[in-house]
Length: 498
Image (cartoon, rainbow, N blue to C red):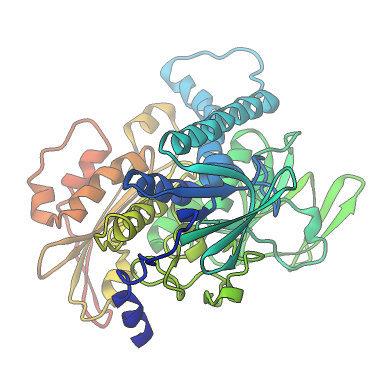
């Protein structure tokens, strides 16, 4: 901790090296959300900026990448497009209750959706390049590597190697999907390939219980595949509110996903039917694809970080202080490569703060309080603030009031879909401040985004109660939850509020 404080006091001394004629004021390795935002904002403050990113490809590797990074090219954006596509099957089912008579066979064309998805991410890749060029950033296509604390080597896609000097270096190389170390792991795919498969898989095993796993389970199942989802815990989405996790698990099964809780795949083999996946319970599954959705790790290899003294943590993430400064004063890092909160909007925030700190000379720390999250399972889960468990176990925690609501959305009462919406508010009893809000149900991310502003402003439960709702909506439930579900005292004692 002492070293951390000492490093933070050197923010200003690390921003200028007098008497040196560098090629660039800033050189950025990585052209994802964090790298692009850092570059643009730094250039707008008058810095001469260079950026290197690997050649574009939908599936990433040590030699392929592209401007836009994981989120735009092989993450949030293409995933959401596929979520939209898969949701239509449920809409067709629900439409019958509203009088729509759908005669004949409804067919899904995977190749058409894939082509439209690829067209969109290629368009966005081009937009990112224009944003950088218009901001005055010099863009290089190739692989970037640190030679020393003021020198970067770029091996361009045409094979030519160039070396540049720079006052500051920013690492924004993001993260990459990981595979379990099991026999046959090379036969499986990750989410990268899952977004770009040439042929749609009719039977799929997905390994993992996090964001990516539950989202792809919904995507493939909604498109008509038989999906087997394996995760080691009792419920998916570890780290989220336990009640919400139970609802998501129930919804996965209700929408046709075959859930194998408390289980894992231990071996993958080639078979004349495709792939043979064996579980730790000796169950055998013959499928078209096996997908690893078992987490991501920072992309820090082959950059020579440790060679120049940049320290990494046990997850191979770059250690940074509160200003995104590494253990080498003029080398910085933002986004997933630092393994703080691995979300695109967080990387954008970190990039803004970096530019303000280094080039606007206004030291600015990213604010990680009340960052909203969304999981695009079907229906989606979204939350902001503290979970009930976090609120009741935080340091010096007092009593916490919990309000919940479970109801059948109006649309479901006519469509006949048996799927409940769940909402929850976590409130500090002494101050009445709302500490957390979550929702599992249609439009949850759109609703929680608005509540995130309220929590950022320190809203109280009384202010929620005084807000007039919009009727008829699901969102109005957040301002009409008057009945206390339970009161949780320090130490864990619980009083039933009903």
